[in-house]
Image (cartoon, rainbow, N blue to C red; front, side):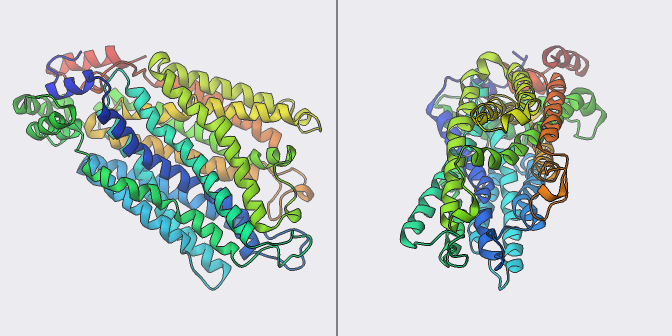
Length: 536
């Protein structure tokens, strides 16, 4: 334990698991539930948008979004998320976690509703307003990453901190699952009320006018969980670590945590002044001292998250191949518009239920036993293995009779992403940096990840196109093919494995032990103690 540790931080680190821990998980987790719902539900309705707004009268196939429009609709929220992670991460360290937390949630509520109200006289007008609102929706979602992780890490005890932060992140899986369930319910209700023939039977009649309400309802329902959580977010006290170590208000920190923990905590204003006035606790993000102490750590968290998200988000490329191969998605022309939404939603729900959700909760169960470092190494290694297992015999997997093996291998890449780096890259940046820079550094790490998501979702969408121009999807130039794309993704996973060695193990240590900011000792002794306790 660090010498001279504040009593209020000691109380938090040593607290038994209590009701307030679960309350914090739900309050922070519902933000991630909303994030996942809002980010992933758009993939459920893009084909419907193509049928409604880009119908081609003489085409044998239903309308689809042009490549540039598809990239914009799917990707603009990622761009907003990247910007929001950087801005709100910085703001969370300047204004406090709680004050900024409410801003992000209200932005998500307003923009979820506005996305469903997108307007315009032309297809271009509707898509432009949809993209505008989804950018700002992503901006709000981006703020939730650093703030939720930082708040949970600063509330948790050191024994089960990893599981608590992982549980917050695991709500993303339920958000993804719920998006699919909502789309199934809405599309089924409309499908049963407004009957329509398949596209090949009646091209115009296959898309009923009421289908325009379906995608709007699905997008707008993303506001519901955020609205339900807002009151409780505003009731949460500011974290004691921010109040004491950044705002330098020992009295308020002690009072807040006395209510939360239901124990008497002595205020230690003199000790707070002593800690926060030391030179060792006042270096900035762009200082040489930060580069010496945390430069490699920040490099490790940014590169691993960037490489992970290239692979993780590009996995969505292969869903259509899998769904079609095992008969979940018939040819588009054999379905009407609402039936297609139903089929896509059912397929995504099954993938989330069988592969995505279990991986998250394996992390929750084992992270404080195995440690972050081991889980991240294992996850990257297994993702590399399964990517190569898909790529090397790719032609074998695509021949009739071998599709089940492909589905199993594909499912394992999802499982080990979530029981691996997809969870740990979110957890570690919230633990290893000083309180006054914690939210900022987490935002930087998360923004690097979102840059990887943009590369994975859209760079590889073009790269995975067939090398033969005649066999590419409509509107796309030739690419390097799916098999070669899988090889590139396996290289990304292997590089992530290597960069993991820059990230320290944080299991079982207090946040102040990891950053050294709660040491009442001379600066030279402080620096030496830090190096001994945090370098793997």
